[in-house]
Length: 326
Ligand code: GDP
Image (cartoon, rainbow, N blue to C red):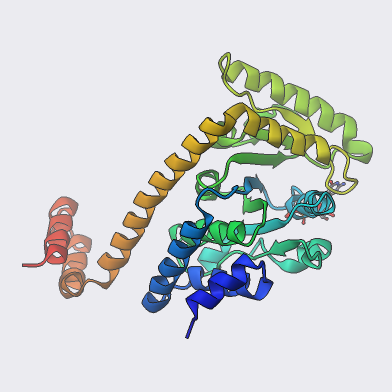
């Protein structure tokens, strides 16, 4: 049995075991756990009202771009500067296969043993929506435990970046220098949500190449963004040698300054509203899956659609009628 009051106290004292237990609770799909998680989050929200919130940063890039090396470098610099750093992961591959590209603690060995850092792998069960829900709630748990920087890592595939961009203040995109057209190698959607872009692995032989890639990309982005709008700065860095990592962090802070206190509050309020509807959709999908009415007609309707006997629109109506009940 989970003792919510004890958990709240433990979290507020910053005890790792309590933080881990709370995050396990918000990741759980069991109805009784979800009720407890709601209770826990409501208490934390009440206690945290008006308290300073963490700097929330999303970090994305394709596997191999150097995310974990970079986070290790950035995270260690931040903890050395007195910050408490939480690292969360949203890994769509773990949703599909149960296996994980991200979040393996051994990838960040140094940060994993840092007393001022907390690393949590991606929840591996459920849908991307479910993982997003758990991660958004885990951010609240970390904030209540006085982590003042939360880094949310995700792989540069599919819908996961948009999901992560919806829960952070600043979205950082890591890329590599490529020959040829820089923009072609990067999915358009990413450039729309990125607030800061870094050409990583700018070390050794690659340094020059990275610099010219960054210049080219910055130029292209200036054309896309209007005057007065935040044009994502493009910098170079190396998570391996730490070069450029401080500058990159400064760009993240610059982006927050650009938003301003009101802008940031408005952005977070908007995210809460979007999250509200995401939770509603998630819950409705869950209810649809478990609806006894739908279960009664499902096989028959599906078979009729497959046999070409029932148009999709009529079939959908039948399922919805069964869901709504008599
Ligand atoms: P992730 O999959 O994005 O998390 O990438 P990793 O951090 O695991 O790095 C992938 C590979 O690139 C590893 O072999 C790293 O040693 C290497 N790597 C990561 N960062 C850098 C960097 O800044 N410079 C160089 N030269 N190699 C790097």
